[in-house]
Length: 94
Image (cartoon, rainbow, N blue to C red):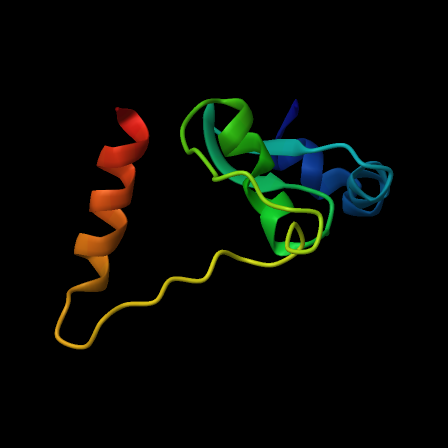
């Protein structure tokens, strides 16, 4: 992933977007801190590709039929959705 400063971005944003259109992901920094990540548009799951690559999140494997959709969770009535996700995360870590 490439990195550019806000100043560099402001000089020629069209050129930066052209790079992104070709498939490059670019971090934009201000004073050395990442403030944005520009990534090519794609299916919903592609938005998380850099987080998966960094090991920050894990995605369950998907079949060919559902790779382009987001995971769907059935949450029983009266159950906290966050509790469902945290339980799944704990199970994945085992």
